[in-house]
Length: 365
Image (cartoon, rainbow, N blue to C red; front, top):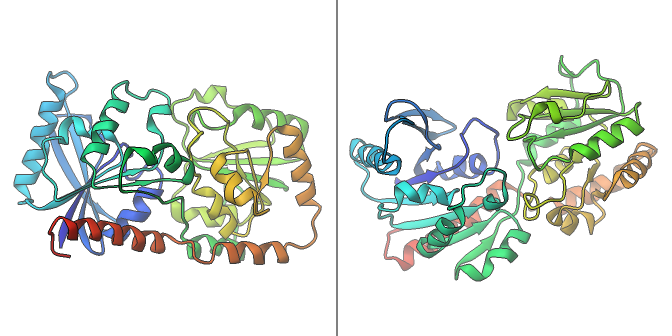
């Protein structure tokens, strides 16, 4: 089996999302090593196994000088320890080029899942390094169509792969079952959101709707990062349940009435393609979303998701949905729309593009 060295800005156990879905599938055909961003410690690395992946934690003494040289030395030591001489490099962050730019992979792949330069606390050198990564990459994937449109002229072999779904996992939510202990006493109707709660989350929309509709209850699941938790709205009808494991999500959302894609419209959300949109739909949940471009098209245009630009729209659509007696016709339309949407299909299409590059580079497939 060949080797994939993946360099990511996300720790493997932070939130189960695009990298985990894709790389766990590629691990059926490759030895996959997932390098997390360095954390404080004595200069070294440590490997654990999870989901068929070798997760490589990098440790670096923050008090030392020549940070990138020392990181490069750790990478080189890892390569020597494991006898890795032929490999593909898979990047989620251009920042990793600071200590991996000397590597000589057979194929270089950039999976641009978000516009990282627009995120809060983005390093100033990120855009320069992304240009370098576009020059190095043999193939580029983007996490959505809007991001593809923004980057398509920067590479000759770039392809959009918007968020997909593990349908079987989320369809289990349709069968309900026992509610979770920390949710079971929350009254209905329940409006739910899961995901990372950061600068992208629309705090003010949640605050206003919760104030105006005190009988609606809002269940918020996920870690709070890069923002002050004290800034989040507090009310008797807003319930923050903290992070949950991916395996637990269907048991929570199966007891919601309406799901939320509650993102603010700002520079950090201009190019996002929220994975939660098709996941909510696969779970059989009606969805109210703010007008994120990759949600408006296709989900809003296909009348699968309500698009609410402000609190008045949100409340109107919430009341409209709660008044419905039957969702059978809508659910049939959802299932038809999602019929060919799966991480397995995305994996297959990506594999073909990677194998085409390998063949053109004279690598045995």
